[in-house]
Length: 225
Image (tube, rainbow, N blue to C red; front, top):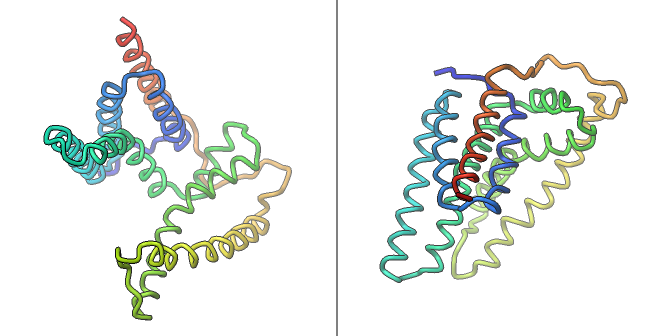
């Protein structure tokens, strides 16, 4: 299923607005709304498997939360799970943003907003570094296996160091590589860069954003009444 190609700027705005609305709207109602909205949006985008994974993770966390609160065992862990479950719909949309769009597409879309070049580059690199971060952890884990080093909960701090220290060194090296690649591609040029991927805002992009904001406004009004 191919699905709609939603403008990445719309997904970025949703990921910015949604968490901040927990300050103004009751967490329970907002959580349900975000779950329904994210599920429908992922279906429209052709990400049905990811939507199913979202529902499984969410209801697993929510069920564990209800179980811990009902039995009175590990209540603090149950509270942590419900807080984490509230962010699952937004994280699911963020994973779609990371996996579906290339760096060139993100740059092209963000530049249509007339944002400062430094901010556009920083946001793009941050978003696209997530899969790189995951891949680097895989390399570190494989390297540890070859050296006979295993992660153990008996020494969590020591084991954690085996992951973090190499990752920090790789971050520094990758930062230099990304900077060099960006300079070669003229990222610091004062002129507006052209792109093969022209990310235009289409009618369904505006419709998705309007419906999302209208839903938030409706929940807020109902809460006040």
